[in-house]
Length: 194
Image (tube, rainbow, N blue to C red):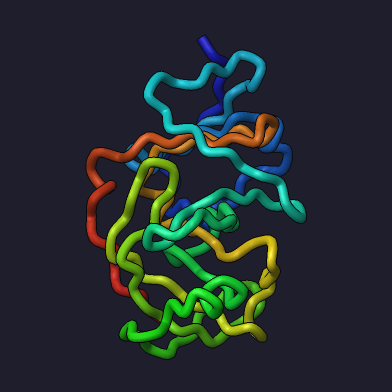
């Protein structure tokens, strides 16, 4: 049996901060059951059926690859604190002409840096590992408003994607493991409220 430290009945996973030192644990987050557990990595065994995703450390954060509308994979931040399904940075969406002939609206988004302008549009598909999501509301950030706009990272994947999974992070091994939630996985995304 794996040693566990558990916290139950968390209210809103997007607003809770994990305690310092959690990188030393495998963090097991089950959104459907509203449970988080911290597992000792030396006794952790990858569960059968888990989809493994490589997490790459960049600038103190973790990055993973996604595909937008069937295009080549791009690196995006793994961000359980982002309330949007996906933010795309201008270094990616502008050269790809992703707003050409696509209905969109001007809006604002907020975070630690205050309110910033974004263009909101819906992507037909976004794929993470072997999972594909349809009709994904996406923030297309402005150049001046993007704190992490670089050629290395192209966006930020947020909680409305990740809360569709039971997930486990193993930062010591730079890995993420995903199981789709049976109840919420295929639900349509909510329209953005900016």
